Image (cartoon, rainbow, N blue to C red; front, side, top):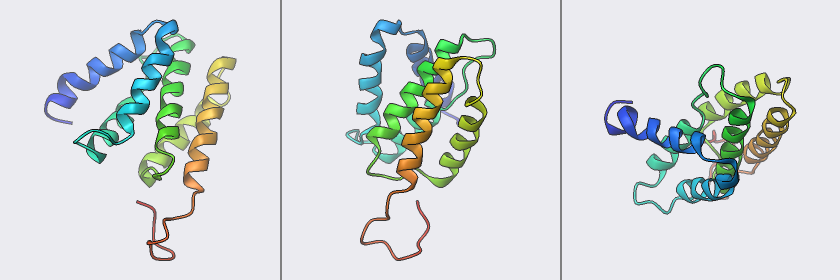
Length: 139
């Protein structure tokens, strides 16, 4: 996490997304989807960095609306990446987090966690590409 990404870019991205007014959430969600779509020259590295940033936990004591907003960004990113299965380690980490959020006291957070879980499950249940060897592990 050394370098510009860990020092200032990730914190700035998170602050921007988390501080965005609710009425701008659709625009920021579209920006997240575009960022992980793979149009960047940095490709997979940029996609991985953005996904890891989105999964960064909200500060303790944050309102539940912020947690729900973060989950909606993750869901949008996973939806955009539907044609590419996320890395297994990332999926397992996210599954564990989502499991902990399903009994959350806020209905909004529970619903966003369930939506995210549905999209993640769909991504994991995709068949491997035809050119993959049978039984080969997911990337």
